[in-house]
Length: 410
Image 1 (cartoon, helix red, strand yellow):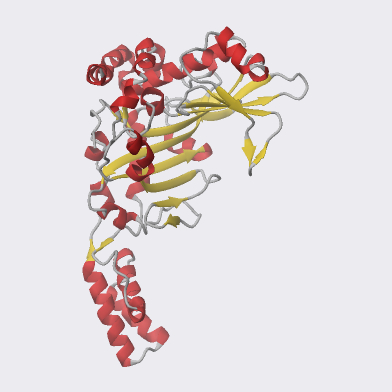
Image 2 (tube, one colour):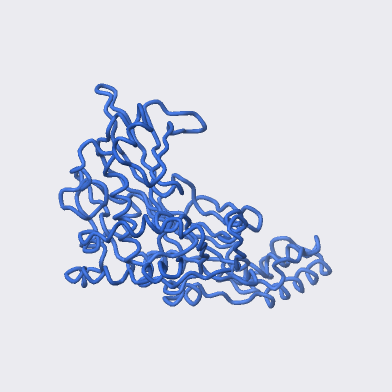
């Protein structure tokens, strides 16, 4: 396991979605390879294919990938009357843009550099390069781009699996879809249609193929991810300075790191049913399950253990032997529960010093791409904390962790 250098002013951000409407060069669709060569697209891989829905290709659509590690993807559609192609949405991953993987957290300076690179990757494929003002939200007052989805992430070391055991039965208020747990690997609240969703999963296990490829031994890392979309995104991040009216509706066009931490904490601090049991891996006897369920529920509900047992006795009329057995099981389960405080686990310190995995060999391969572009000052101005936007040029120096990484990677 190689722990990544701590990023300055870390942003708890993973995949991001942008909505826009900008025309691209049609030749890129009809003759990708020749057009890419003619446009001078040389230092990244470009690929395309029809978008799919329920496994079937959607006519008049294209997914264009502009980064070999799936870090920048554009969803494009064709107008039926003129056969012109427009970018409708962009999905990007700042960490993958810079490092080829998303196992490490990016800082504010790194995020702004990733946005700069993403814009420059996309600019050559536009029919009119001046339309690049519509690529990155919040940079130009005339821009049409806005954020439509953000994945807010927090990575925590979980050496003994205690955090996973405490959270695997959690309930997320505000998500009306029943949670789905995939064994002991992951927990998902919400689906693709939900505007608020929560995912909890073992990041080290998700990246095990990459770890094997680059001979990295990972330490257990638990990722807690909050996904915001649509109106919920505007509701949570739509404070003054973060929004703009685009096509008659208020949209999120910028944010700062403190905004993301605040929203992530708001969701995870409200989680219900987070308790760790010393019996988490032990399968109880068949005749103990009712009692243990009573004991477990009494730790996550406002009902006391004695009241829960009294309701059980009154409603189900168990025999004295059965009642005594289930009472003993309930008391044992209650005593085995270890208090879990989301506000303590998801503290400010946790966001400042996130866990992570570093792949020096992989990351060094993207050194030239990182080195080619300096941070755009307009982007730095947009994503600086509101009180500091007047001094946004200082953000250039906050990419020192990138510079430090360069000497380390070499």
